Length: 116
Image 1 (spheres, one colour):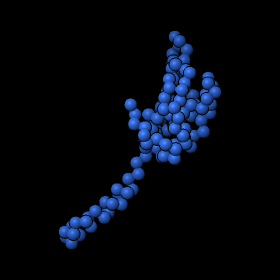
Image 2 (cartoon, helix red, strand yellow):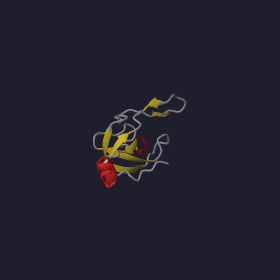
Image 3 (cartoon, helix red, strand yellow):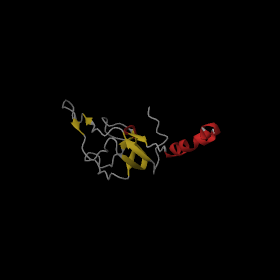
C-alpha cells in the first residue's frame, strides 16, 4: 500500500509513472489503451485536489487519486466523470534546500575545522 499522507492540495509532486494503462473493456477482446491526457514521468505537478474515486467500471476499481493543476483532464467517454490520476503514479517533491543551507554552516560548529 502506498503512503499517501503527503498528498494534499498545493503540494508539489513528481510523476513516477506516466504510462498509459491498458484495460480489458470488452469480454474476449484484447485490452485497449486508455485515452486522454496523462502525466509525464519526471515532470513536476501541483495537486489541486485529493479524492477517493468510486468507479462503476469493474476493470477500473475504486482508488485514491489526485487532480493536477497543470493538466485539464476531460471527462471520460464511458462515465462522463473527470477521473483522477492514481496516487501511486506520484511521489512528493522533496525540497532539500534547507539541508544544503545547513551543510554550509555545519563546519562552523567545530572550531578546530574552521581554524585548521
